[in-house]
Length: 395
Image (cartoon, rainbow, N blue to C red):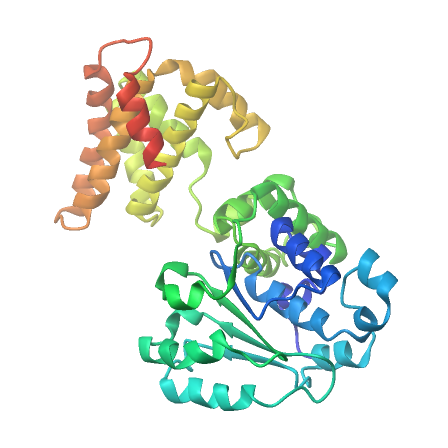
């Protein structure tokens, strides 16, 4: 049997398995219990947060025979049973009551007209025919207009579930006729816990810091995190410790610049040490790191200083405990105003580097300039309120 990637193998099969989207699953389950199922839904949110998965589970639940026949199961469990004929057909990919379309490749008026013709026919089994349209924002304006009348007055057996990463591209005439659910980015802790569960199930030893690094790289996307984990498992297969996943192994694979390098920058600024700063620049260039990516991580590093300075706490700093302690310790070395001045300069440098020649020299010069910025800032106990608001609003 061919290998199945982690993102598919561990794809949720029930509402309770969906991570960090309880506001969506709870509403859907309540609508099933009350029999208040709408005809149109829009699931929006960033990539890999569970939109299509939730749509598929919802579609399976709508035709689950046990949910229809057993009122007690409907009220107390409200999950697709996975055992009735409808659920088995869905899981084997042979269900005629659930249709999935990719609007990115089927976005013409003719495609929507064919869908409209199909909608007229009722379900062969069960109660509903469910149409899941992924990346619905890719439909043309003409296609949206062709679909409008069907969505406004659909047959009683038809339910439409639209998934999109760009809600603003959907015409108001469409979105106003649907129930809209916004899927949140998945918190780092939840991603880390899910990855740990997968590693336990796969009998893989892994360091907690390594999973946290994968989660940070995924930026709130569970699917991205699982795809990275697949790569890391393959990379670590020849590890001396039975394929154990280490933090350093993950950092090497992802070409990740670790926190120590970021602290080297702020240490060089604090010490006024241009030689140390040039060493950091050479390290970045010599190891083939992307300079723009480095500056982006440097902004995040400085953001963590500002968080500690303004909250007197590291609770919003997503790092291992040892790194959090270092942020707490080093935050007093700079005034908030000096940190914001550095952030403003780095953001401006990111824009200018795209159009500059002598790329390496400009990058080195930018890092050296950080020392001058801090040394030229007078020692103050706090930053002006307007400067604080300007930065915090930009986050």
